[in-house]
Amino acid sequence: MFRKQLFTKVNALFFETAQALFSNSLAQPPITEFNIKVNRMTIESKTIKEADTKYELHDLITSRWSPRAFSDKPIEDELMQEFFEAASWAPSSMNEQPWAYLYAHREDMENFERFVNCLAEANQVWAKDSAVLMVCLAKKNYDYKGRPNDKAHHDLGMANLQLVLQAQHRDVYGHMMGGFDKEKTIETFEIDTEVYDPVCFMALGYLGNPDQLNEKQRKGETSERERKKLSEFVFKNELP
Ligand SMILES: Cc1cc2nc3c(=O)[nH]c(=O)nc-3n(C[C@H](O)[C@H](O)[C@H](O)COP(=O)(O)O)c2cc1C
Image (cartoon, rainbow, N blue to C red; front, side):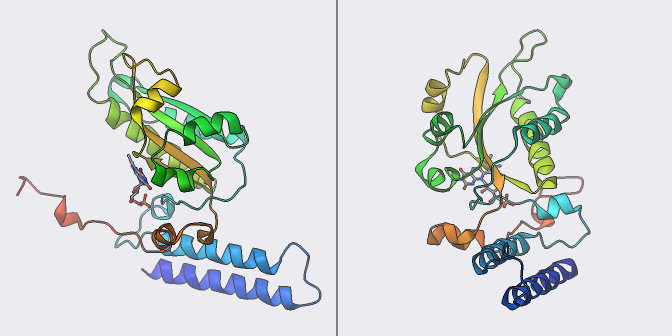
């Protein structure tokens, strides 16, 4: 609670200073009125999305959220490799690491569009502006003895979270999507369904301006995040 108020104050101070600089004749050219507005909106959505927690949680946890407004700044491929490495260090049943990622950068428009076209329309409208899109796949069977791996979705989720937290550490935001056409995805990417289950998509990018979204999305982008109370899902000794 206190941290959030402090964060808001520091941001306000920063932008007041930036604005003062802009109106001053000594102002440097990169700070334009437009930039100030874009940054202010971006910072405002960042502030409002900061988790309001009772306990002092790690910054990476409180600052992670799923945006829809992405800037047009690309993500270096080397940085993507860093995120995938973070995913690779997730725990998994029998250390089988039953995940796979198929991705494309937006600059590679031809490939990127194949990903966009597999998404549900409601996701396409904003995810088309992300820097990277990917399909997150779970391996159906353990490599060991080929038995069905009923923990694979769980393990992919762990890897995904490690990936987005590492991304967060670099100011890159991730947004997972279950809204996609599975059949089309399998067909488009010639996925061997004996081996893989395409579980979700993920959009990644630097934070953009909520103003670039439609009204409904903008509302979501600028409203506080909510969570269930612990008492609704944590039980001592027995379930209610
Ligand atoms: C597996 C999964 C599927 C999701 N599917 C979608 C989706 O199709 N479209 C969307 O806009 N958000 C989707 N989300 C994002 C959730 O709505 C979001 O994580 C949730 O509202 C909590 O918000 P937060 O991530 O900002 O804390 C998905 C998230 C996960 C983990």
